[in-house]
Length: 394
Image (cartoon, rainbow, N blue to C red; front, side, top):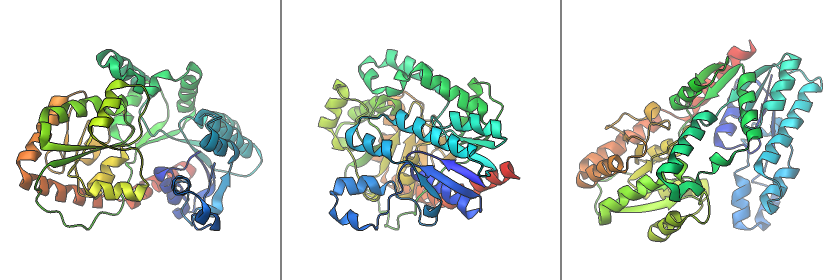
């Protein structure tokens, strides 16, 4: 049996838990919150709070395996006293104690920033160690951020990852060195690991798409509707999209969906005033918002996957993304989307202009994008992850 550990239990983690359960390999799932959306108290909560807690709801079949450590996470969410690192380290300590308790586990499956103590304990106890790295290797990230700070100093405040402490970076390194099997979601993430020295086998298992939209895809008329979805900051290459949109003038309508990565960034503050800005939406409404658009642009400088790529394709959007995402694993360039170099507003503008002037091509690519997403459902991810898990424990 496998002990799975993750503090917040986002969509890919919930799917991992479901994969292990379906394979009869899930022993326990340690997380912070296991919210029941059918609980009576939901009727009395403010909508914003209810939506936030709904993101912490586990699949019904997984709930009996959940072991929760809620206190610090509740305080963090509602008062901000604790940081996410405090929460991660606390959960890691609790999991390590569980591994020492005598309960027999074949393996522990943990994620970046929350695995160091668990893995040390597991190694001492002869328990196998599976490490899930949802974003690329930190040394590569630091290099890219340093270069970007020189290129776009006005956006430097939004490069929040560049401020990680030496203690945190050392912990990341230790986790990777203790891992026996490393699971990543994109070829890009695997390639970044070549800049380190790790003994663990690396498996690329791309995430999955939600159910595809059944809406009719018609030939566009009017402005090209362009969407950016994610944290509004320079790690996502946002300035290059904004420059591209500016060069196309009134031919495109740009929507920015996501919270600011940092306050007091003048060009970002100007962008959310100039363009349509939606700070946050429940996930179901994000998908509906995508359906209003023609194109998603994700020109990230450093990403692990970019789940919005598949979500957008499932809604029938053409995706323009950089190779520092899962785009090379998912997109047939020129057929169901476009892959553009990082830091190239010109390349983004060229692809957008092509779609502006060729509505028939846009429709063809939207249909192809939706077909591609339909072939990359979450079931495919779960099958791949279960296969790796079986190899580890047998």
